Structures are given as C-alpha cells and as structure tokens.
Length: 514
Image (cartoon, rainbow, N blue to C red; front, side, top):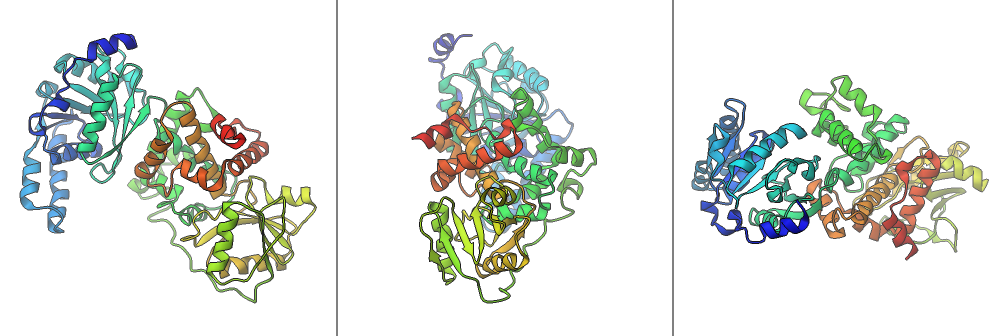
C-alpha cells in the first residue's frame, strides 16, 4: 500500500477511540504480564472498560488480583479512595478468547517479544476489529513496519511503547511504521495525554528512541569491565555521583541480563552488525552462567549494590592549586573549589583544561589515556580526571594516573579530591574514563537518532529523562559541554580502539563546525 493510498483510505475514518467517550470506548489488552496488567490499569483509571486476555489459563485473573493488591496499597496510604479503587477494578474484565475483543476501539498487544507470534495476533485482530478500531503494539524493539506486514489494513497499526512500571512511568513512545497513517499516530498521542502520559513520536527504527540511545550507558561500562578498568561497584558509583539514579551494573541486574542482552542483540542484528551496538562478552558470560540479576538473586551483585563510602578528610595541608583552561566544565570545577573554600589561582591561556596540583597536571578527560598524554607531553607527573558535570551534587569522581606519576604527587591530588568532598575513584588508565565516554556516546547516539529522523531533539531529551530517568537528555548535555569536547573525546576513543563504534555523528560534526 502506498503512502497516497494510506492517506485516501484513512482520512475519512472515524477512529472510535477519538470519537467515543471513555466509558464507551473499550480497550483490549492481549498479554497479562506485568506490562499488560499495568496498561489495563492505566486505561481503566481513565474510565475505559477493559478486556484483558492471555492464552495462559488463569493469567488474566491473576493479573487482576495483582492490580487489586497494588490499589489496596494506595488506599491504605490515603492516595486513593476505596470507591475509586472498586470502580477501577470493575472496569477490567478477563477475556477468554480473542473474539471477545471484537467491539474494542483500541487493542494493545503485549505478548512475547518475537516477530512471528506478534504478526499472527495482529493479523487476527485486523480481521476481527471494526474499521474504526486502532491496533497498537507495545513492542520495545521490533519494527512496526515488519509487524504490519500481512495485515489487510496496516495503516491502523501503531507502536505504543510503555515503560515499566506502567502506572508510574510517564513516557509513551508513539512509533510510526512505514504504513502507519499519520492521523493514527496523532490519535494515540492525544489518547496518551488523556491517560496522563507524555508521548513522544518516533520513527520505526531499531530500538526506537530510548532503547537505541540508552545502549551506550550499558555498553561503555561493559567495555570497561572487559578491560578490567574498574569493578562494577566503582563504575556504578562514578555514574550515580553525577546524577544517574542507578549505575549501569545495578540497572542491568534489575532489568535482567537475559532481557538486556536480548535487546542489545536485537538492535545489533537489526542494524546489520553495526559495531556501535555490539553485544558484550561480559554480559553473555553472565547469561550463560545463569547470573541473570535480581530475579535470581545474583548478577553483577548478590543483593543490592555496594553502598557509597564515606570520604576521608585530607591527610595534610593542600598543595598549590591552579585552574587552567576554559569552558563550562572548567567553570564548574572552579565553582566546586570556591564552594568548599579551597584557595586556587587561575592559569593563563593553556592548550589543555584541568588543574595543576603542586607539580602534577590533572587533565580534564578528552578521550586520551594519562599514559599517552604523559608520553606525548613529556611530563610524567600527570593524571586524567573525569567530567564533573553535576557540581551541585557530585560526591565521587574517577581519575587515573600516568604510570610514572610519583606517590607524593598522587597523594596531593587525592587530598584535593577529599577536600572537595569527592570519593577518589581510581581506575585503570583506560581512555575516556567513565562519565566522559558514557556522556559523549549518549550525546553521539542522540545526535544520530535526530540526524536519521527517528525523533527530534526535544523528543530525544524528553524520552531519556522520562523513559529511563536520566538526569539530563543528550542535547542538554551537548549544550553544557559543547560539541567540540564531545567530538574530541569520541575521536580520542576512535584512535585508541581503532573501531567504528566511536565514529562521530554527522550532526555532531555539523554542530562543531558551526
């Protein structure tokens, strides 16, 4: 079906979900797992009658009981009236067969994340539902275009990707496949808002917005673990310290390594083996060994992740400190020193940015290892520090010393870290450290998504903050650190690893040249 045909055949369709009041617009949900139950609850809360279907005997009833248990907790805490709970539960009815969904204005499939079963269900629904009904898929990574293949009316299929836990998470990715009618996506956007969600539009490409842009958050830490640059606890600590709610290792433990690995593998394969999305041998070993995360009691951690350590007081009077360079991160570093009442001087123009502590130069990370810089600059007293991108809350920061840095100079730098209230996170001298390479790669992936028309800049920022609770979106970080520094880090990583994984997005280069 051509785009012109889609426009002609759907422009006069009266989409029931847009034209009927909520109490008359039935919602069908196929799949009564955690996500399906959450979607059913949200739809019922908005006033819709809901039919919840699952092929597993008793699964829909069990899901309804679980919903009731959660609502009972809200009532007990005074966050919901008992009458509202009872009315909500009365609107959700288990269904025993697909035929019971025939009168639905919208059916959302939430079944196993595999192409063939989803296609079979969607084709069945397409033949069952009235022309004015919309069909949505909650797929997190499968192409909506591929899902629509074989449907008689593919124009009414749209991605409606919720995030777990559905009642709490605000984001909905509204995903348009090649055949999705624009007005269908618009109707689902409006519906999402009526359900109290924040929708963002995405083109159907591998991973959509969130699962695509988020890959580097896991991938860079997994790469550092493979290099033995630091422990899972230390790498997590570095990223939590700059505002991430969970470190990548504890987050992968929470998601489940089997699930996270499967999504990474899916995105990798869907992008024809693009090295930017290559799965990790470290994570594969965890999956192969049954260390799937919290659901089995062991992953990177057994139980909760390691707690933060108290920062010791400086051991002696601080060495002289000079702040050199320019840019937002340099100014933030100066603000951190000022806030702690630490005396420092400002250096004159320099071709690098960071601190001079005594005789040791501490370079702000630009994607090059301390050993390489020390060799090139013929200055053995050298270290590299990570990006202090959250000066108002940071309490730990990674750094790595060049191999010939003296013990006395190292101790002076560690004393400055403690005076700033930062736990010194000492890493193996891997280029890019933790925060710098992770943020640069998240910015780069966000830039590529916008360059390729997957979403716009606002959608990318909104999706990452609401979908995975990032402290900022990729374009907000880009505005803070600037394209020059991001490209410098990526180029440094590219040279260090000789890999296309770190190729710079055309959009990022455009911003740099502009």
